[in-house]
Amino acid sequence: MNNATDILANTEFIQQLINIAERWHQGGFFIVELPSRATYWSDGLFTLIDSDRSAFIPNFASINNFQHPDDRRSTAELEIVLMEASSFNREFRVITTHGRLRWISCHIEFQTDAAGRPVRMIGMLHDISELHEAQRLLTTHRERFNALTSALPMLVWSGRPDGHVESLIGWRRLTGQDDRLAEGSGWIEYVHPDDREITCQRWDAAVASGESYSSEVRVRTVDGSYRWLAASAKPVRSADGAIIEWIGLATDIHDSRVWQMDPTDSIDVTGGQIRAARGLLNWSVSRLSIVSGVASSAIRRIEEFDGVTRGERDLRASLKNCLRHAGVEFIFPPNGKPGIRPA
Image 1 (cartoon, one colour):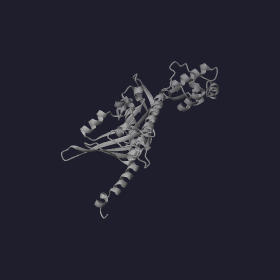
Image 2 (cartoon, rainbow, N blue to C red; image 1 turned 90 degrees about the vertical axis):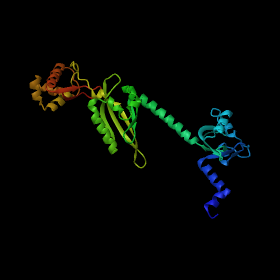
Image 3 (cartoon, rainbow, N blue to C red; image 1 turned 135 degrees about the vertical axis):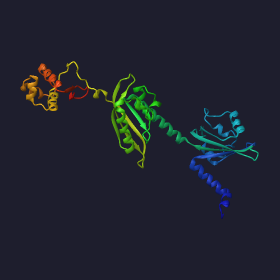
Image 4 (cartoon, helix red, strand yellow; image 1 turned 120 degrees about the horizontal axis):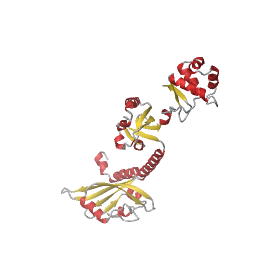
């Protein structure tokens, strides 16, 4: 064999190529001559159904006989395929002679004569069982993930490498906005107007730099009120370091941000709050004593205990009232220690 033409004319060599391709792709092929319907199966096709040539002589309907009952085509449908003589793709299950279930991808083409009449049908089959199993596992994991995130009091969101938000699990439950309308930058419409600019700036900066993103933002809920959320996101990278997606979480921090202000003055201040309030105002014990009318010794005794001491409620109320008028706001978070901040 001195040239490519000689090589391609060598039927033994071509058969070797076919055998290699069939093993590599876990597949086989069949040929149906028309109009006689004489049928030929390759070795790979027999292997797909755990059989060999000595078991039976294939015909036009043979592969259909091995298909799972739920996937099997009727004889009439097979005849339509021949009449239309147009290429098509189909996936179906086969039950092999050993009782194993396999998913098969089938592609059919027709050869025609000079007049355009079909003279040959060629079918290529490929075992895609592993692909279907991977898809099944992926679907199962996705369903578990969605069930988990739906049960947790948080939002889970994802975005493309360019920052385009694709999903916001839990967003519709919180805001009432349709998931499709929230995609891209649609979610920003439910962010408090005062928070939109800084939120977009931080997100754009994170996407541009590839660094982690975090912010605290107010979001309009279904009932029209705003709640504080803490949002964060990290890039997911491929083996070569390229960002393939963004994954983020958003948790409700409203109760810790909007602390009770005690408008009725019914909550006792602690010694730690009084001491911190003096520090904020840069007041000495003596000055607080003069302004409040509470003895210095009593102020020192109250401040020695971070919590609320028994008795002396009137004294603590006087100190609280005095410090509030001086510009101190006493805060009482539902979780954590009582504190202060400038009014």
